[in-house]
Length: 109
Image (tube, rainbow, N blue to C red; front, top):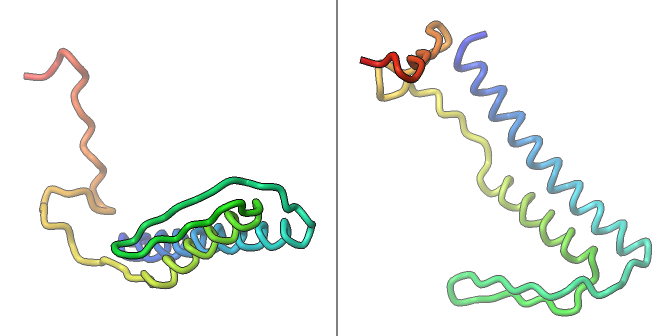
């Protein structure tokens, strides 16, 4: 497998896993609402530049849904891109050369 293919597969897997975690959080929040879990889970405050979001006396499903929505929104907003450019350092590790193993302590010159 080439280095480029490994980057594409790894990045795709990472994005799909992130999307799955966000969707699962949304689903769990929804199921908490549908299950009638309405206890007070606490308060949350988030500030963005000049705006702020305040959630008070929220049910547990609210926090799951908000976290899931933020994760899904961020993953979709960032999209998927593959950085297939060679590294700037010519001594960097490639698929053809293994990484250098450091010398054990006490044997360095």
